[in-house]
Image 1 (tube, rainbow, N blue to C red):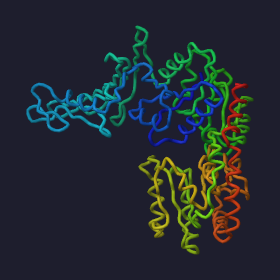
Image 2: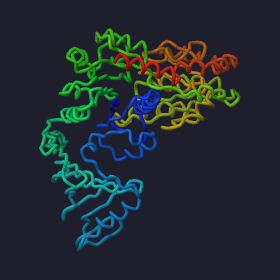
Image 3: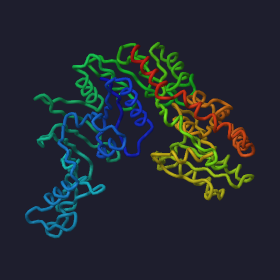
Image 4: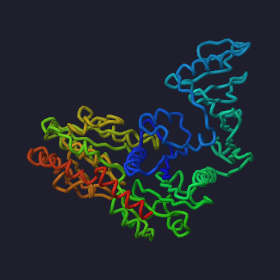
Length: 497
């Protein structure tokens, strides 16, 4: 079995999880068995699986041990809520139950699903919180008098405690995980941290599978666990972003990847997978391994590549950027170029698609909005949020623009070209130079050269023939990433791996 490891699948799906779904489709195409492995508990797992089409293809660490019998009937939760609230001597008022005029039980729902139930003492302190998942009580959190987490217990299908997380007080009243207990195979096992627990789980997952192949897509979640495993399956680390701190091939390796050299030497890691040829070559050199492979993270269907998209529906001056609102995307440079461009071309507008990075209290998006507001540009520069399907956007925009400091692949550039949308990008590590056919399907610009970016976009506006040529060539450039072409690379990898 081939296992693709990540943290969890979410409704607002990240590029990494989308890449895993594409990889599943490729492995199905190659008749290779594959599953996704998730390490975090996730209340929205069923909704996410239904959205992504991965139902029955996901193995979660917690459910591996809990094996809960989920109830899919939406009415089951409502019956369970009534049962929880109807306690002798308590008065039910809405979604809570009172005793002697004080709230003692409080039910919380999410999209009409029972999410968790708080049990309060006579002084109003939350003693414990029971979490539910599709009609099953899945785990309980216990709190001390300062509302600090003390213990979390996960239950199996019979209601017995299967996994216990223990916490002790830390700085700033933040609880620190000190012990994990697992009841498994009629014995109680103890782990000092998450990495030990995950390593044990992975060992069990591959114990009876001599052909197991682990492909890790989340280095921060599983790379350390690879070092603690007692079995020796083939293990590969995927670089979804640059492996150095600033994207330059000779710069300092990011801290999370610094153990890789030793892991390769000790057999705790078999090899590396990058999204581009350039990064695979750089990784081979920096980590001193010949097991460094270049395999794109996604592909485009033949139907998409052959789709006829009328050039007349493209809106002149409508530019888009598909990117998380985070500092590394350098959207401030693009915004300032668009503001400058708008002075001479009033029809110019920029739509930015992507969710905000919550780091540092949304500092990046707040700074971007400040630039826009100070320049009075809010009527032609818009934040459009995360959207799962950007087909209409790609097929009406004049160009997709990327101004990142570095990338792992730049999936949005490929998706844009697959919809006949020209791509304009800084020539950075990694991705753009292998996706864009320079001066044919779009343009590569020196990194951080805002004047060159301005001139490039201006030329598109004043030269309709240039814009038309890029549009006509975009899907042909994207054909390098068809299902058949990417599947060949995976097939070659599986033979060598």
